[in-house]
Each structure stands twice: as C-alpha cells, then as structure tokens.
Amino acid sequence: MKESSTRTNHKHINLDQQGEAYIDGSRVKVKQLIFHYRSGVSIEDILEGFPNITAAQFFDALSYYHDHKDQVNESLDQDSLDTIQEELGVERKSDGTLEIN
Image 1 (cartoon, rainbow, N blue to C red):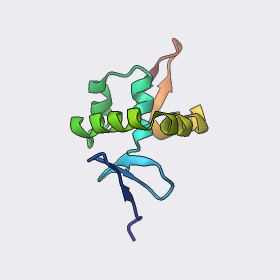
Image 2 (image 1 turned 45 degrees about the vertical axis):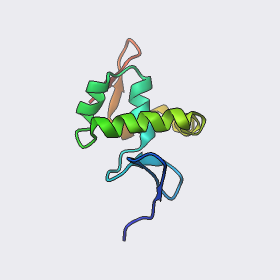
Image 3 (image 1 turned 45 degrees about the horizontal axis):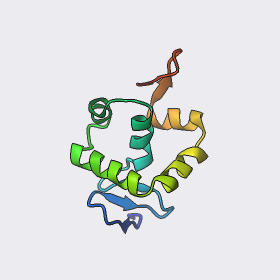
Image 4 (image 1 turned 120 degrees about the vertical axis):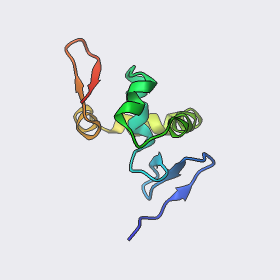
C-alpha cells in the first residue's frame, strides 16, 4: 500500500503524512539534503552521494528550504546528531567537518 502524500507548489517536492518534505519519486527528505548543504558539502558531492537525485530536484529542494526555512530548521533541530549521522551515512572528522561515507 502506497503512503499518501501532499503536493507542494514546488515541482519536485511532496509532503509525507507527517508533513516532512521529500523529493518526489524517492525517499530522500529535503532536510537530508539541507543537512549536507549547511555542513559545507559541495553541491557536486551531495549529488554524487544521492545518485538518484537530479540537479533540478536538488535546487528545488533548496528553493523549498528557503521558502520554509523555519520549519525545516526546526525539524533538523529535533533530530539528534547521532541519528542524522546514521541516517545520512556521514561521519564527523576530527576537524569538525562531515564526511559522506
């Protein structure tokens, strides 16, 4: 059974039943991409780490983020660093930067 979703005014972004924004046709949440983006990971590296996401989808997620910054940031703040690191497959290096595994 397919979970229901809600369309947004962003072509590539839907909301799941919990109100979390994700890339249409994938399981990738907008906040996952934004987490990497805010951590200083280059757009090229983010796209390499999410090979099923197109550049258009990524930039639409970035646009969605800027339109809903408070909501996305609040969702990110609610997640613990350990959970995010495990979910996204990243590791904190000794210099404080994050590395995509």
